[in-house]
Length: 287
Length: 272
Image (cartoon, rainbow over all chains, first blue to last red; front, side, top):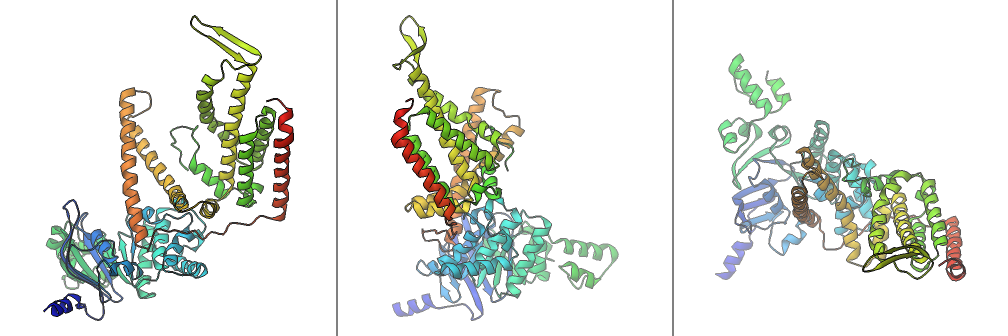
């Protein structure tokens, strides 16, 4: 019986192409507040998943579980087929990188190059090897010109680029980004958006994105998960989720601008609401 | 650079770092090791030397180096106020009733105050020592890139002191920015320094408490971010420090010989 229970306990329930599988996980903080509650979630290979929810809905807590910074109080997490527990969480950072919302929390080293080399050196790379990995990552995000700068003298957008390079240099399979375009000017937000798409397209990295910018999610995500009260209350393609106004309202969100425009056009111009565009390109095509 | 500093007499860390990163004088080009050894030699002189003349010459030499390095001399004099006040607050009690030639005397009913030449020299000597140590340290900071400073700290300090230094410098900026923005917000709502003493003291205590709490939160978040990249308690810096050139060896050797000569022979023959 014990053998059977161990077998069940250690069995990998995730599907072969799944990188992350969260099975009904809950997390309660020491002060009693609920971080996530019976949350089920999965990330497949080479996809961008957007976690959309209002402030305090549990998005960031979920991201921290993906990297092993937090362990669930209840339920299981499997990353690349391995169940995460106190022992296996130690190496999780090698597979799942996390870009934090505030770049100042992440950039601590005296220079940009030192900061980006921090991860590769922890992976056990030699100095030259780590330097090459860091330079490659900085080039990939277009931040190679900042190598000798002090992070303090970078703009918010430049800091965000360096933060992404710091994670990319470790060559993880999955990158979790917490509000990657918040507090950025439109130009840098566009650059970051382009980089996220490249991480998936060029580097084959799966992306988990926590955001309340539904326009961004509509443009780049393959799948949307709506988070409320620490649970995922709906999941689907952007065109399915973003036309469900009641669902978005319930989650404290507002539909993307394209959806608002399209619905207004349908209402006032009598256009037949069939296509459900979520990006500007789709909207133009649908007209 | 911060432009809403509480006082122009407090050394501006942002300005110091700006010069260290963007100054291309001969001292900026010199190896950080040369400058560090030079600073140690200066501190050695300050520890041993009692000669006021020697201290004046040394101070003039350091001011000359500072000026030749195209650094803002007026700012330096602004920053002198705090060390001067600090020394005065200590010496104001010690300088009286020293044995020597009487310069000034004040007789009060229950005691008398006398100022002698030695009392005055004590004041001048301590002032010079404070100003020399401040100016030479600022000169090192303003002509050495932060990456080199941190690499030096990493090489010469033992664990965990090196780790504390490596991480604290960057967060000094963040904490200063935090204080700066709080003071701005405080002033923007009518707060000031001299309106109501008890209210101001309370407000500054609140700002201090908030900075403490926020710094603690920040430290937690930084630790989390570092752990997420595999931090195991040891952080290494990869910056290579430029090596000393032959000319630097020569200059440094000449300087050290001069220091040794002054300390061994000259010091005893001049005014003490």
